Picture 1: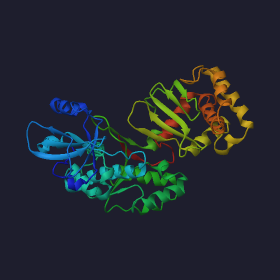
Picture 2: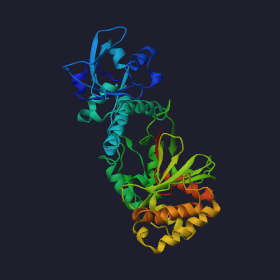
Picture 3: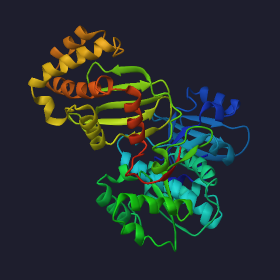
Picture 4: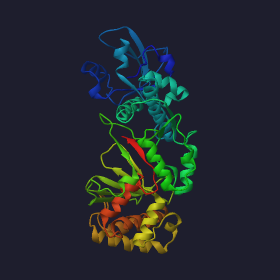
Length: 431
């Protein structure tokens, strides 16, 4: 609920709010807005203060509180009703998600961390207004869904924690910065590939020196696991919760590596884009690997990401270095990436590999009909697309042709996406 009535000056001119989803609005209120051609869950308004004119008035059954908002066409709407009724009509909203990804991630993690801290240290459930106040100048990038997700995460976290006395920080804070530095030294893995925890809870009097000085990955990860099971350190990976309740699991790589997965990792289907920008290989359990180009519009570097189809979150990136090593050592195949795509010698190699793929898997794409059609698209494409074709086909080949057993290779990708390796550290995931 957006507590904006009588608070318009607090949130400021232009603060965005959005009509709640259809199932969260009463039928009379939903109908009131529909009469003015506004849609529940979609129509976005901005708060305006002391407008010079009003185009329309929407009156609730009871109350005399007033809120002025502007719709996406610039029309000023005067809302008249009780503050509780008006507030319960809207959620806070930000339209900045794509252009401010890093900032929004920071805000989401802060919101969750503050909710955890307020509950365990002060026995207090922070309100949405509390959170907005704590965000300060960042409040214009806030969205109600961040609070709703954090609230669900907190309820799930209570299953694991029932005490106080922790310090709280995001990854790379005062306490965890030297921890990640040591992890990089002994594991040779990037920070997130060692431990993807976004928020860390650490007992205030816990001595971290043994972890800072651990001389091997085995010792470091063993000490971290021991600290977790003693409830001295709680590393938490956060995923946006869009379901009714959050779920959780303890990702303990040292215990999980030899466990049998309760997933059917046999082949289901593959979809290769006709622009050769990406492909998705899906298993029967719904686990999938998306392979493609990102980071820039012209990059030739290929990235891999694990995901569960139909889930509201990604599992995480498949470690690029580990994947290359896996393919080279176990399947004697050299992946093509980066500048390799610019070598014309590899264009014919890629076409031959794609032909072999089509022979084994007649349906490779929703839009590419067959091998001949695929070659026609490549030959007619611009230079960047041909270079990308060369590189991405090698990754498609490495998944569909080279592995002696598809399921074994998918298990490797699943573990890598979830940071379950012999060099990875334990964490708790809330999703």
